[in-house]
Amino acid sequence: MKNEILNRTKAFAIDCWKFCFLVPKSREFNAYVNQLIRCSSSVGANYRASQRAKSTRDFINKLKIVEEEADESLY
Image (cartoon, rainbow, N blue to C red):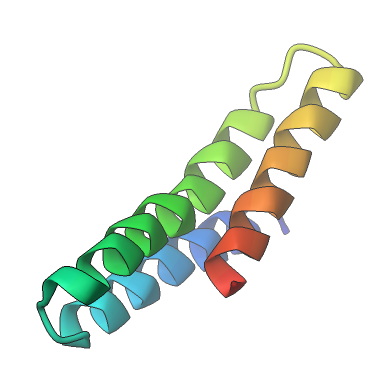
């Protein structure tokens, strides 16, 4: 299960990057593209960090960040 989520969050970041590559390059879209790349890659990075949490509270806090970044990517 752990590896499945790691693989899925990595695939999510890669899929978002591929989508962003297809978006026309213009000043209007650049801010959106940059933000999507940042928040989508943050999902996987923060999930990985949650696996090294120092306590249950730290683990939950890191997963909340994952949830927020995923929601931002969706938006």
